[in-house]
Length: 312
Image 1 (cartoon, rainbow, N blue to C red):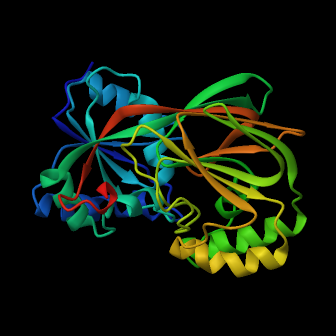
Image 2 (cartoon, rainbow, N blue to C red):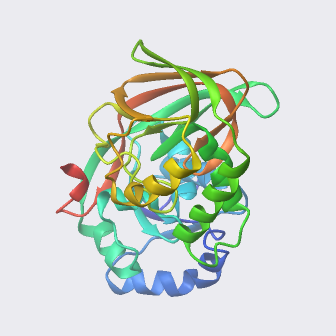
């Protein structure tokens, strides 16, 4: 195993329509200008960042700086979640959505994010683990860092990922939401949160560690990433009018309480549906229901601003 520096940058060249790879030398120069230097490992394909993260940890890295978006962080979390004494993780946001960093107040500016990587507080946060049915029909397990879901939001994330996102994350996800909602129907769903059961027609079950998803929607405004619990929001059989009236409130985090939504909180969440619906993990769609979500308390160390707004 090649010996690494204590700091390793894990670069995802794909987010935001591909400029990260082209601009990495510029990003590296800005980061070095504030004192952040280390080996740089460039992802070559989907899932590669997780492999690179494990290799860096085995080579002695103590800080992994993820340069990318929520999907890049997801890959790294999947690569190191089961390691004893895993390296701390810092983020230089470069994806389109950037929902995870919103919870912690990590800025998009490269130099400012690099300063946090160097001098920020190291906060121990939870991760989530999901068992689901992969697209090939086999049982699979994966980790999520920010938000997972079962239902319409998986199709929305796929629709948004298939667009250029040239108009930005919010516009892309809003357009995808409206486009998918037009053809989606609520599905009979059986939900259990620490044994507390709910059933009925639902468009979505959102299971969150962070507060934001979908390009800035504050879906779970009370989520705390280090409380050992997952925040759950169910979305029932809403109408188009419900959606249009509620959507602006979701971006502000003022949509709850709502007569066709419910907020719950627990350690283990199971979702079974009358027909398979997509499971979404940090913007990726690895398979379908049935799904079992569980919290992994204190599973990752994250470098955050010292005045961390996510601690409240």
